Length: 67
Image 1 (cartoon, rainbow, N blue to C red):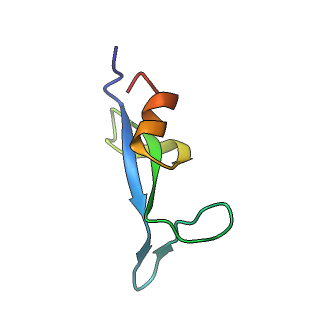
Image 2 (image 1 turned 135 degrees about the vertical axis):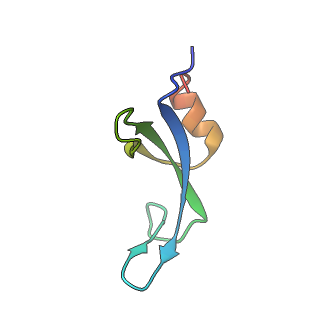
């Protein structure tokens, strides 16, 4: 049964005025995105990453079939 508090989140690179997220492979080469598993806190509504760095949605789903 699916856990309603778990989500697959696509994370891509971002460069803002004061912050930056850089997404790369193990060799440091840029990649379009990585897929992470996040859990939503029921009280606050905040998503917290609990697992990181899947290359595809399919890889994330295979590792977390309860999503």
